[in-house]
Image 1: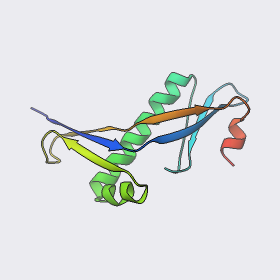
Image 2: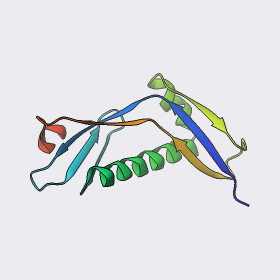
Image 3: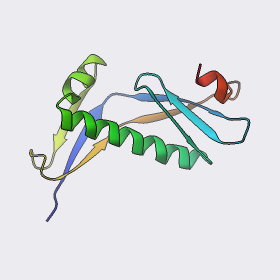
Image 4: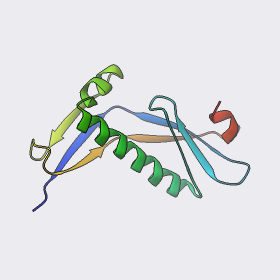
Length: 109
């Protein structure tokens, strides 16, 4: 049976969000060095969450997660088996900051 290891990240990740001229939603998070897009806000949020999950898993596997979190003033709490044999699931507070006066182009500058 595959056990899930839940890791709660105690920190807020803000994404600046705007609609592109083509009508797609674009989200940028300079703090993480990531940009994502989606046809709807719901799709964008799902893509953002997937990207953050992949980033956190990669940092965990490379042994860099603790240093990454500490450099941002964040920490983590682990629940479940304390081994990496299970599936990792990160709970990360993500906030989409939609600004009507921003364009997708200005977000990427």
